[in-house]
Image (cartoon, rainbow, N blue to C red):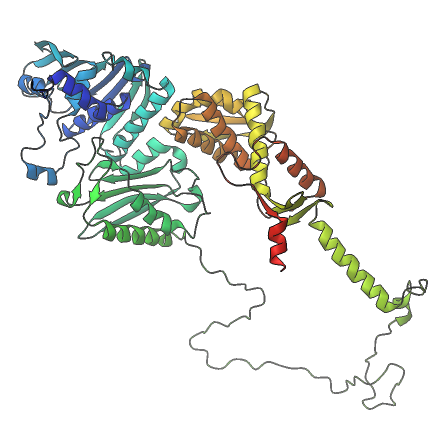
Length: 614
């Protein structure tokens, strides 16, 4: 029998490896930007066309490569970052695997121009599908210039599954933001279709975060910093009022590398727990520096998952540091005693030993038993005191006309009417009863139905807003003074894709440039709602869906608006409002659950009710 196991050609092996490293254009952007940082660049340009499908180009002024290094860099597991296995536990660079460039070259056309400062000429290298087509000397600037063209040209299936240009562009900007926020000393510029869209000048850390996230965060950041033998932790957390329902602005960086860490995020959330409503999440930008031999970044090719040797102590340090920062900046609410009826406590003044004795004036002629007509016959004559003359008979007028009801019956009738008034104030009508301004109780054929009034209203509004989006019939109410809403670069990338649907529900937005929009009109259905925060939540919710399906994005917009406009718990409903909610809810084809799967209706059948009284 012939042997069946054989070695794969390098071209096929590189394509398999590319499946893990190169998932979309944003993956290439991440790898190239990290290589530029490792090369010591102080200025990096990112140029894309057609959301990276046609061109991804990264130009830096780093140390460059020799002709030999340029050619060897595209070989599998060729790297300048490590030499021995021990080096894996002392990593100070972003890259170390030696997989990125050969994986990129396996699925795209690559053109590299690079030159070291000490060399007279540079190197020009052209590779397509892991095949070197040309290598020659060339005159070029110091540093490296990578141009990646026609991604997945030889893997049509992978190219077919790329998302829309808006989604891919948003992912590219997300990677740029993550790299830029941890390297504030480097200047970054983003050029799209020959137009410079973003420029992050070299600055301090706080200014870089503001440049990336938006100017509205300028007054919302609280600084944190602590250094221990285990770790150095610094950065910023957002004030409690800046908390959002989405987790869009939550960043962890370890030794200059972005990471995801739900366990550490829980530490920050626990510190904010007494200060923010349930369901909202704080914003934070946390930078952690630890010894490289206490972490392991060699877990996943994306390097966003990191294992810590001292995970629990760092959790406790992080939680304590955030609590201290919130208290230091008076964000923790202080105890506020009621001073309305409090006595005035005098302040001690040194040098004053004797306080003045209070003077009390007493009228010795006062006699409470002396009437005005008694004159001087009673004891204490000569007093000018006179008892008030009350007209007692006037108090009984109006009671003499009704002879059928005595005083006890009248009091009982008043008590009954008062009790009935309280009952019907919480009752919508004879069929519906509002319980504790939170639930609606109504009788059904099988027993007693309990409806969550807020969730029911969310279901009703969701159906209404989704219909408005699909039919483009939302009614806009003009604002007297337009409000300005500012987006981050990744959020602004989604606005053109969402603008038609946002306007379909009733918003009127106008582009002011520099990732800012003016809100000129809001949906007529919402009242007393922060429109700036609502727009942010709608955009964030759409980004979080991670979907390219138009229907799912429309549903995300409608759901965000429905939750913002729904009646809150504790709101007392009138008879008509209660009936309207019940009737419209039961008319919905999906009346049992909210659009995000929360239960609206619970029915207690007659047998269960009877069992409780046995």
